[in-house]
Image 1 (cartoon, rainbow, N blue to C red):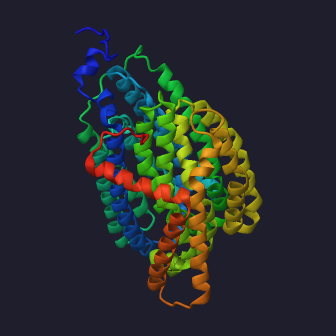
Image 2 (image 1 turned 180 degrees about the vertical axis):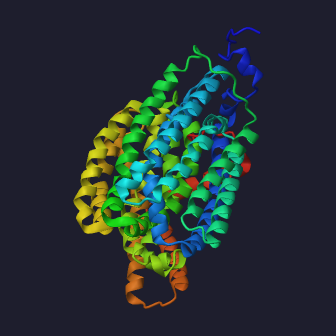
Image 3 (image 1 turned 45 degrees about the vertical axis):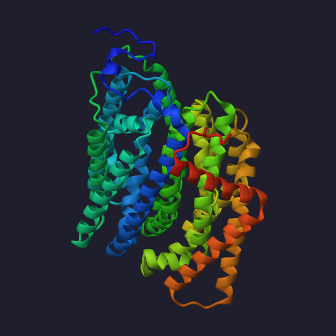
Length: 518
């Protein structure tokens, strides 16, 4: 067997592995594949939303804010270290036009080696973390959490190959089963009085199940690492992604670090749970679109107009799904916290309102990473992190004397007045998508959702509904009907709603039309 490359750019070892690496077959019906993949992924995330919501309702009543606060103290550190497990190499696998068996095998072992190093590092810093917070219990919690690095590092490249091949059904099955297993373990242990250990076991069970699932469904067996496998450009790509993620996550979790240090686990738990509650619908929409958008846009980088049109259409759909939901959560924050978390979490409702205002525009922020990654502009991601991180840190410090509420207000103000607009400008300086495109695409949806929020708040001010369930249901009808009624009255809104019909028709008919809609 030789190592010479075929005309398609794939060596013999790649051919031997089947269709793990080639993506030529995906271009034949990229529009239909992307649309159907979006539906599959959204459906799975809808199911996971129900599972997550149900599990949150149960576990919030079995555990205390202090339990969640203790785990948040560890998670702020482990989330930061997690980026080095991946090193951006999964995105490099998805984004590159051509890859080989030797390249991905080498990257697999790089990820495994990094995971081992991170596991040992986490164990070593456990005593220092406990000393910083003044919580001796964090030593064992941190050591146990470190096992997650070993488990997760084994699945990085397998999951990336599934995404590269746009195997959305397999990815949906893996993540849903992993979530079910993780929450089942957590609820059973919490029910039996395990306290914060239930949260640790839940996360480890989820990661372990996800790793097992990716290996089983991917059916790819890595080979030995090769010194001259040609991974240097992929490592450079990953280095920039990791540099961005390292600075960005540190800045985003700076509030957790400071609140835990100066305001204790109780206040940190309340703030953390408000953010988690807000992130459920946002993540359940952003993450599936992220899984679909990056591989789809990566195949269109050589067609600027189709690329721009595809991105804006996807962004529009994300905004249509998330903005009205976040508006509803703001309008019903106290009812929602009472129903989902219980009366012991009442103080989280005000935090949910403040964070929700910034959360309205989170779809745009998250989607900009699609542009920078698929266009190979990862160096711009790193540079942007150097710009935004200091602003975030200053905002957190400014609000810290007033506790969680002060930090939430200060952070939201910085996002809405400075950070978001700077990012739109920075991302639109080059590439097919310009700065004005972000505003034009999202403005009608943002305006209609904000108007619907105002109507819902007016309704609450004029009525005195006692039942949280009835109040949430009525508010859902008000926000939903008002949002889409206003959209129907705006020309740009009518076009957005009409495009949803076109995409649904494409899914049903398995059309061969190009993704640009031309």
